[in-house]
Image 1: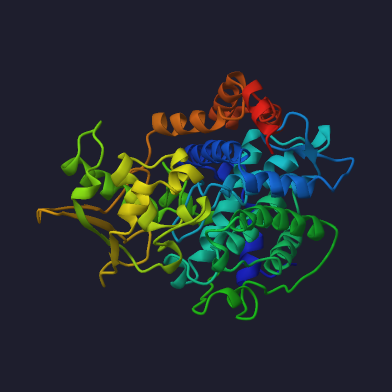
Image 2: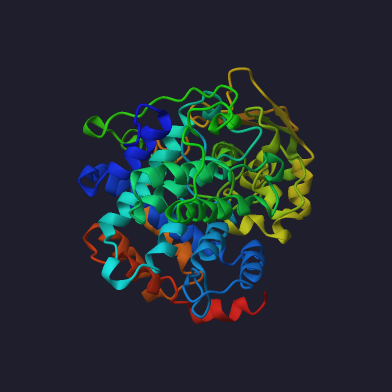
Length: 473
């Protein structure tokens, strides 16, 4: 009998033992919002250069079993690589959800489950409730692992969390979806731990989206290996040399029993992004937009020559402090760029990160007037941080605005109406209107579906405009 007194054993017991009866209404509604948002950012992500590079690479693999590539009407890939390229799409614009402690939870889990849903035999199809259960198991495992470290609560400095906890979450979700036995769930976690890790040095580059794609693919692969009988360390989550290798203050705890189990997503919602950039950029963009209203009207140009200097009071997070970003990926990770773009335009949008907008002379001019400070009370933590923007004019007048909580943060969640608006705007760049509305309807009633794989057919309904645009890649 599998020991459950170990941390690893307790995780395996929870992964295997949770059932659809454990799902609460709050959990179902929150996770459906996460699923819809992730599908939307993944669909618009299929328009990016990094997605097409990942797709071009993955096309060398073929198998009799294949899964949908989101937004592609005529391309399918083996499940592992469908999960990979769809995961890359989800994070290609840094537009996906963010949790606390800091990670992007959905992108590492959803593509794997969607890919798997198409591969199951007709007599073993999974319902929408089964899908929601596996998704939430994958989210739950990530949250539990991050709470074993105080370091994990802060914005990361050394490694990208989705590449670590996301891989484990994908392994857990895939194991649940494949109905693995309890000991196989334990082995899947052990195997997944050896796939985990990616350095933060690649933030702000085309490589960062690969972290999410690899997390989903590797977690799914770990579950497949576990199904085939591959073994790993049976105490992988208990050991400093196991999962503890990723955190210097790792302090694992045995999970609560099934009888008294409470989901983390029930207590801690996620943040949904309004702009395709690092989460910290939402604070500084909102503060800068508020300052702009003191200086120029809605339809007026910013009086650049009247600006003496711009001061940003931000947390000390070096990889998102980039004075003069040169690419879209650097711009998505630049406090300075997002503050100055919001000042110049009144908002930050998908179009803000085009090469044409990044190289604008007016933008470069106000970037050169921008300096940053790191107040000691401004912690690099998505629960505690703030951003303050001050603009001093040549006449000596200074205007200051501070954002403590942006709209979309878990303390100030997006309304369902605005979440739908974001999804439709993103998905319509790729899919037909019928496909987009079909996904909205299907996700809305996901818990009532008898076969969750029907969602895949809607993800292939490309619009004619998108098909013509794809020819440029």
